[in-house]
Image 1 (cartoon, rainbow, N blue to C red):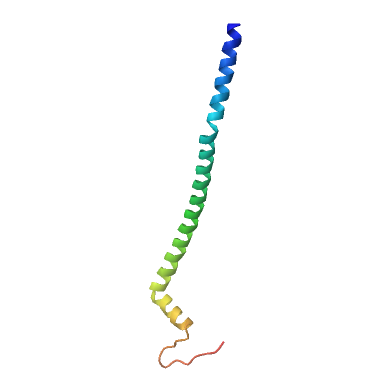
Image 2 (image 1 turned 90 degrees about the vertical axis):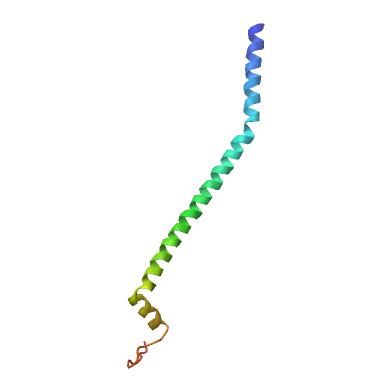
Length: 84
């Protein structure tokens, strides 16, 4: 009879432990999901930062500046504009 009570107690303790651990596991899953989302956003932001740095570097160069102003339709003195 003692063995039956012990087994029942162990089963009851395991069941209680599993029941009480539901919420922490749910919180863990939620935190992992948020972490993954933030990591993806961070990767996108890093790619955008890299693209902007390249664009800035290009625009800071003399060739990039000339390309920018010519794109706006400006020409050097003495040149004639060619329509495309």
